[in-house]
Length: 119
Length: 121
Image 1 (cartoon, rainbow over the protein chains, first blue to last red):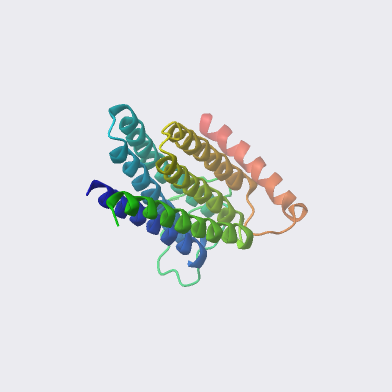
Image 2 (image 1 turned 90 degrees about the vertical axis):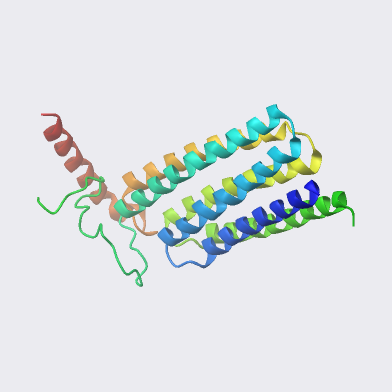
């Protein structure tokens, strides 16, 4: 019974990874691609590590796997945010169909100094 | 089909789906119109590699591979941070030749020094 549950969990995780890769290939610009890769991809790989943690059944292996999951959940948003900000500062334009861009015109120079409306 | 057989079959299915995901990511790495797309593809390759190692750990039952996945995650995070800083300070948008933008970068460095001096004073 546990094996059936773990098998379904593993296939679900692999499908999440595949959806992330399809999104990376199909979405129109780097910001929307980042949305696919950093959320679905991290969740897929994290779910695989959770599968290991349940399958092992030993506390030392399960703790290592869950520590890995916690580490990925901490670092994935940081790297995605850093990359999105770097891309915006570098001047990569969002997709032409983008509805809203709150940062438009706020990055005056290329070094990432953010200016406000009051200046 | 016994539960054990189903679990082994699910491992093979997961291998197949992850390999397809690898192919899509590599295709974006080749096609990627901007540098940021390629950096994002490399980040995604690291994430998929962690998942692949996790499936391989379940396949072999040799749990020492799990440490490899954690180490790969750490190295991948640092690589993405370094690439993002490169992208920010390179200041380029598209795949234009580097010589065309050289003056802009030098001007940008000059304004940065002025700005940081002003902030510290």
